[in-house]
Image (tube, rainbow, N blue to C red):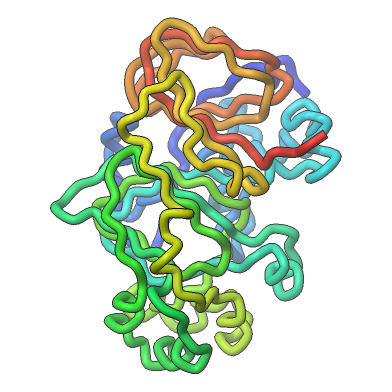
Length: 336
């Protein structure tokens, strides 16, 4: 580990081209020009786009890929307990995601499905922390309203009945401060005008049920598995009566630290919103920090609205000073 690796590091934008529009809110947060098809900023990413060699990976200011720096000295970056459980794997991907149009109905595989069919330890459970909205009806869609048969899901996909798929989901109006936990398998979509900090397991595995009008063809929607196999990962249970278990409304809370996701997310990732007025002490941890408002310093590193920072475990206890609001994202909780 080089001498610079034991301090917080500011990272530039990392926006691999996507199939959908967006990016204006990311640009406004960072104070940089917008890219029409740059709706995702992959922060401190050691994950590539599906099927790609390097696209999606973050680079440190010295030119090294963060992935390679972590592999070279995993304990310094991640800590002994984390490495004992996950090896040289951050077990975390953080994104800024700005939906300039509605995203298609899709879902993600579980750990078990990914291990069986994709040769990967991680599936893709995720969570959305809403940090901004535009338009009159900022909405996300989470899980089917009622139980749905596998035959009906397969029919929707084969006929590309977008209207039926979207109508079958639970619409949820969102505002800044809302946090939504999205377990693997749960079909979902993000509506136009919703700007989030997204935490997820470190893969780019998506089963795109509604591919027409979004992807080039059906083959791009099933991860090379074929839909007969891929649709086996879809959670077809009705969620209308249990949405409250997945959503936290925290916009009115200004505690020094607000737990945004709670214990159900801890096996996958953790997120807190920090409200700093003066000084806050942060325990040692690999972490990704996204500054939403204000300015300050972290271990001597200047911060401003739009700063994105990766913090190695070896940085030790950090002091965050200034007058700011930030989201701190961390890997799964490892007991012991």
